[in-house]
Image (cartoon, rainbow, N blue to C red; front, side, top):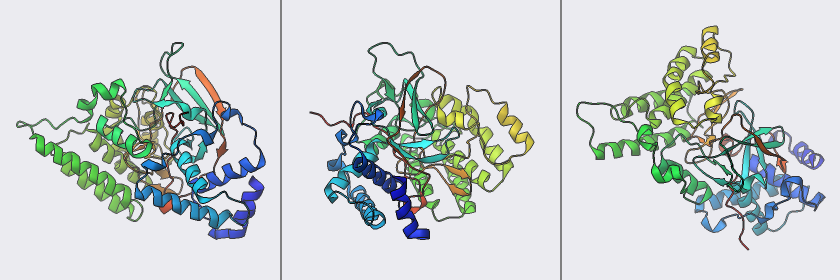
Length: 400
């Protein structure tokens, strides 16, 4: 497979720029032509047996699929014989719904892959397992006691946000609404949406308008990170925090989101004092809002940029049970957010995070199983310079 891809890559030289998803699909097609045997990860189901949900795609997603197919033909048609476009459309849909973003321990983006067996797990906002990666292998580890016969649940998204936001993300990317106990009780929504303590509490309509504003500014920031300077992005963060603080407490997740983005910009600009100032504000609330073993929370302990010794010492002394400053790795990731994209702080690039494109969690617990990925892809930039985030979805199996 490498030989075929290398030939295509060399023929385009500096003009070689297929998206990460396109490269992954190309590798899947190449592998299917090389062998018809089931891989270890396909012992339960083949990738071809998963749903693509093409009937649920809106016009924008359909257009993106067609753009990917055109790019696939453009970069690989001289080297690979492709199936018809309808088959390719289904394959892209299956990969987008059932793929996984591969990250290192600091949540820096490494690539994308498909793990057919791991993708069988259904979602819960109170998962009992987490997925981590070692090279081309996915490791599924228990973070709660699991009794024989219990269903194994993973989280597809960032769990920082309130119930309505989480379900909006799930409907947008995975076409279902979560009915787990956490979503049914909304037990954490009050703390996540904490209001500023005022002598006269804000009216309900005022709160609704501010929530609407917060969601819009998060989306505005996600788009702006592709064309605005870090200074402009920092200004967006600061102005939005100033406006939201008239209604929201500093521990409100929308405030925390913009603080996190501001800290990421400060890290990129090597403004260590600014990064420290924002980081100290989000440490304690993050430890409350994120579940135990949260990968996002744990990854905040890791900072790739060179920092002053005082900063490093403070990071090193943060208790393991609570998250710290965000690392220089990716997301929306996470996960989880409204569209695609994630954190990219350091390593020569800067990209902000949309409502965090994922939630993965880290921690101890027994290893449930380890699976070799079907395909894995190097960290290649995608549309608009954004790494497209794709996660597995356990309910994407065709019935019958």
